[in-house]
Length: 156
Image (cartoon, rainbow, N blue to C red; front, side, top):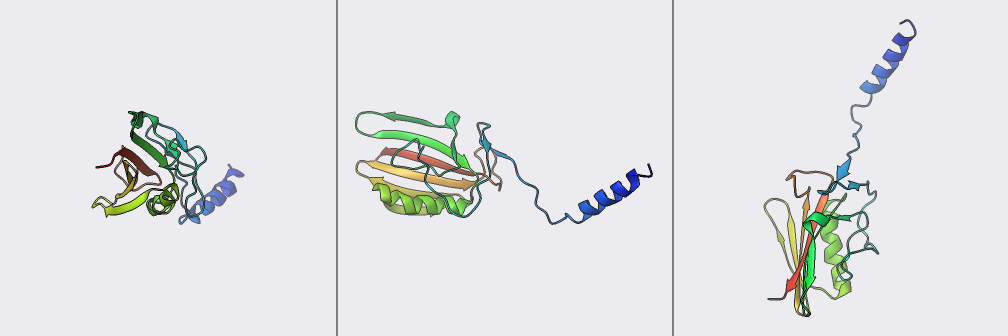
């Protein structure tokens, strides 16, 4: 016990000095896939986006259980959900800035009372809705996960 006492004192002292240190958050998608930490500010388009003209940000993963798509020969019907570790504001800015590069025309933006954002775009016969919010679909809480819902359908 004589040798253990100094070790306990040192460990207790280290713990006391770590009060302002943030504990890393481990995050998962609604499907249970691990989401690694994305450092830095801003988002970049992934080369592996499921929709070629609506990129998914690097570090985001598709939530397959909540995603679907079809094509009737004229217009796509798409409902894709992506989740990743990023700030909500970065996800909103990502789509606002990158979609015009893919010929999507910005129509409007609606900031919801729950903190989520919906952006509307059009291209040809299609309309696109990009819903973003901080948190997962299963938890309406502030978290390190941002959820993006991409909806493409016929233009009204």
